[in-house]
Length: 395
Image 1 (spheres, helix red, strand yellow):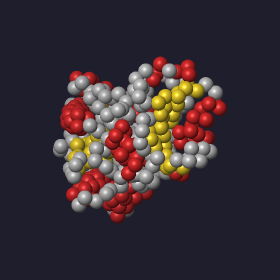
Image 2: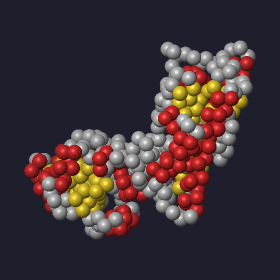
Image 3: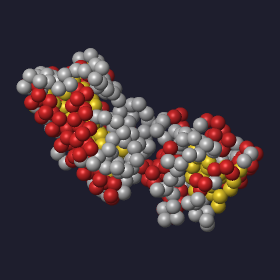
Image 4: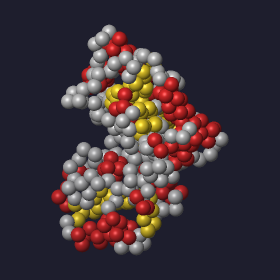
């Protein structure tokens, strides 16, 4: 379903006006801007030519469409303007007419500061600016009208979060019992077991969960496989990172840590640091929200990272604290908790979701991460799952 509709248009136009803009220009060419495609309801529609939609501060939206691809626009409201072009001259003339000399937002991030938002090719920016238009980032508009969840989305996410937390715990118990029985299970087989549990729970995922044993957990993007099977034995530290959702709803994304047998002092020390970094992010968010203050994703990253840096492990925390989880994607287009990989200064506004997942990784030796999800409610922070991990699980 398109996010741009006659019902949503008044709110979008108020936000455009409040931002001091003349309009929001959506552009896509063959999937270069998935935000625009999804916003217009074209995520599953074949379009091979350039499209534009201007949402003006006042008045009906205007679409610029190619003559040979009119079927995709059957749902375009009849009261909204739609122009057709075949030649580049006609396209550029229409573009000049609708945005010339105006201040408009596009999916653009100056200096590629936030690549998840930076969807407009340099050549297209040149074309738009050649009309005399001033282009600014649509980042806050994307957060508000694209990345936010509905109430039903939140309820579905919370259900999925409890399901996958239970699935992770059952996986650890199974791995521990198999190890102690002398029939250790391999990483990839435990992964398959969780996929079967997803199916029984009515959940879907875009890729299988991650099971990382021992030093494998020091690779944040490790992928288990039958070709390099590694079994889980007594004494192993095990990381499970799993993500799933009810069909069409926001993902739940979690990471859990367990030890098969008694944990080492080093594992406990590192676990305590990443747990405290996670909790520092949660505390920072809760206090800022309760006080009615704005909070940026970059600020939360700084608050979490400071704990790991103070403990002397800053160089081993090699990724952002958290990623956007928007209504469609697990790695979404909303604000990230990131001041390391990118300069994400977008505000965490009511309705956005994200992961909180600090980690410490010593390549070839040991890696630990904890991950929960956050959602900005009306004046409150919601964390999922309900019971978050406090100590290393002994399986």
